[in-house]
Image 1 (spheres, rainbow, N blue to C red):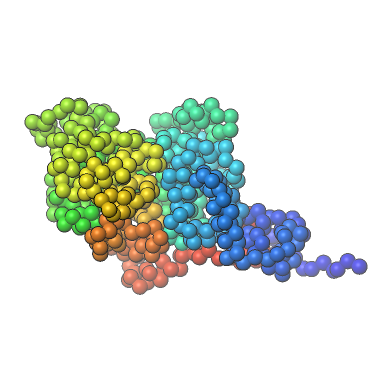
Image 2: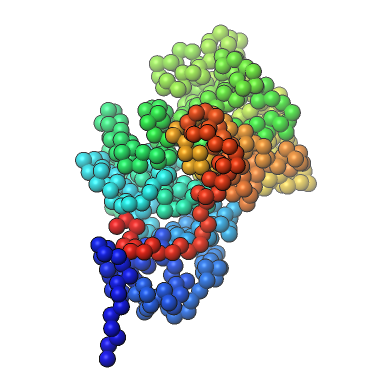
Length: 576
């Protein structure tokens, strides 16, 4: 005789699903799926009997098994695909793996592997994630946001895929960078993945490889430009503001012709920032402040050459100017210490018509260049020969641009040159750390945009720190949520930079030239930086008054630990 049916576990008004149908829906939702960790009682009550093998595992056992399987993958991209497969099926297990092996796995989920993932994204086996808002569907913006359902989105990463890392236009396949950034918000700052959302604005692509690829999933059209482009992004921003007025909107990898303008249009209406401009600036300022303390020279005493005068290079320069002004320089005197080199050489008087507004602030007047010995059209070596910089930063995306003659000439005029080839992925780095160490006889202080192995030199091993935005943007997110900040100020980034600089190992042990802390300590570092951000938000008047203890308690309340969550009563899917 059949057993009497049990009462529905779902409240009135919520569709009830019996047996395998309800169980399959649970297994298909990565936010609640536990896989083989569902207990026998849960399997019976949730309709999972028969859908899972009978052995019940703990999360610890699942993580160990998954990690062993991951180690068997031969290439970083294979490991990326395997990790994304775990993330698509079981987010708790995915973030437990990152928590246990963050230093090892960050280069897989983020730079440099994420660059290759963007190039091959449409051909990789994976489930769709986040939102792809396409220009041909612009009339359905509200419906696209509504597809997220009732989730309380608190952090949103958006890209249009035009300037992915140093590899350029990847169109809709730039989604990989948004997914990767949000993974670090959780892995480094502990934000609940249920309150994050990756978005790609698909306005076409000018990448012929994408347009000719039969597997490319994006809109196969040249990029929308001009006012039509800005109108589309404006419609998206307004739709986000109506639906999630308190969201933190993180702009990522927009082209230099759009990045600054979009930030300026948005930052007073939403809590918004651009990581390429402001996050990169803050982590670079932090590493430079640490280097200055290690060499016992003030930042305002440095002469700074920057190769790559795009939105990132100029954004970093703006933050360094602000830091120099805090040390007592006037803005004019601070800007005079910057020599920015772009594709047409040094930014200088007479070029203004061909420059963007944010570049014109760093034009060197002709009178200051009088008497220069110019052999290469005001290229990098000309700048090194004449300006004698003590700091050299790279944002060019051009491998090998820091040449041996230029670096040796810099080192001849500076006892401890500070050289940061910051372009990523690794294939786009301006110089390899081993070469920089050799060309400067081991005297250079080096930080890179992508991870590199330590360098053996003169009987010692020199660690190479990655100047990684992951020290900044997750902390900014946690600080913003803890403070309830209404806007992101420049002062919040400066506070983040100074707090991060204070954690540099070189300050406590000059024999270890690490300008930023090791990644294995990043979660503790993020807490310290996040508190500095939250306090500065209060000081800047963009958050309600609160003391440090209150802000610290709020931070802890926002930190999610990778542990299986209970399935809400009446659950019918996170998007339902």
